[in-house]
Amino acid sequence: MNSLWILCFSILIVYHFQFCNSTYIFTQNDFGTSVCKSEIYDENCPEGTPTIFNGPKKNVPMNLGFLNKTSDIFYDGYNMTEFGFPIFFEYFLDNENLNVNLIIANGKQSKVGNGLYYYVSLIDDEGICGKTRPTTEKETLSGGLYLNQRKAKYAYYIYQSPDSTCILTIEFDDLFQGDYETKNPKKIKPQEINLIASKVKGFYYPFFTIDSILGTAVFLTFKDDKLSAVHYKIDENDLTNFKKVLSLSLTLDSKSDGGESILWYFENPYNYKNSNPTFTSFAKSTFLFFAIEEYSNVIGIWSPKYAHATLLDIDDNHRRFYFLDSDYLNYFTMDYFEEDTEYETFSNLLSNSSSTSFIHLNKAYFQKNQEIEKVSDL
Image 1: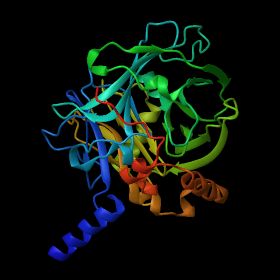
Image 2 (image 1 turned 30 degrees about the vertical axis):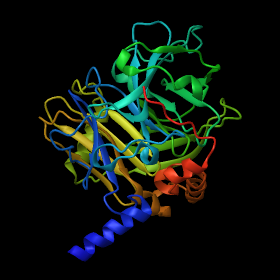
Image 3 (image 1 turned 120 degrees about the vertical axis):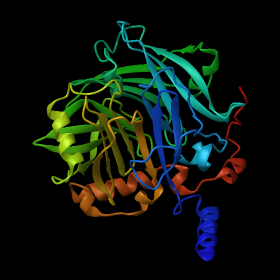
Image 4 (image 1 turned 90 degrees about the horizontal axis):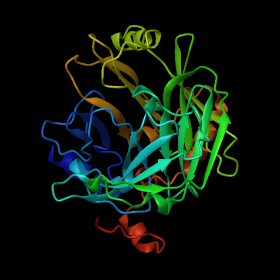
């Protein structure tokens, strides 16, 4: 037992949590959002786990981004530099134009251990996006910020409606200002706004997300009782050119109660609790969660190693966001992709990714990189 512990500890030092206890889950309840290690997909963070974000309510949308900034180590060894900086969104649904506040982690901790966050307001003043904006809480699921400072030239806020896509181009430095604790966001102006027609077949609105590792916009499609996560590359040279690059089949076990419940949910889209669904993508891992009225919560996770859905306790008030396991990215199988060419495409996307979880860029990298901007305390 001691020798096994020493081996695992040694690997942790060398590979930055790559093979031992590298699995993290994000959960959100009435007190805020927490992140912690978990060996199984349907586990909650232990009671009393510090929240990295104290949201004003339970249904705050979220995705992850990657910044050229070092991060404090949060609960259970979570390092935002390696695994992603959380981004939260506040929408103003009664505004005739798209209006969203972006709450972006800066990697620092407050005195009580919560995360500190930049706070900016993004408004489509000219109304270019038109009706391509959320009007209900559930529809806020269909927006996200592509923020990968190591890979992209700009940041992009994207909102996806059933038939159109609105893309707001943002300078990185414009995002890194404001203080969420003041509750007063800094208004920023997008460099450019593009509204394009969407031709994604079978898109099940509003299940849309951004994969900041691969640099893709991800659509959940539902056709003939089959689910897929379809990835479209975000082309910075031509933002109007959304090109399909991957289609990951999200298979369901017909013998699983969770699998049957997912199909039941999609056939009855109005049956859900106050806890809105979530749909997130982290390279090969696709994650789906929703709650069904007077039945139970359902959670699904798909990767090359697992394709599983399960029912959760009806009284469980946690909302799931992500299941992060770096080992998934090292388990390649062509069977996971719907076309053989997609396997090669994914490998190329991942090899160009600057996610430190898998390229092993640690703090020593940033100390050598003179372009790194030191995070200042708010």
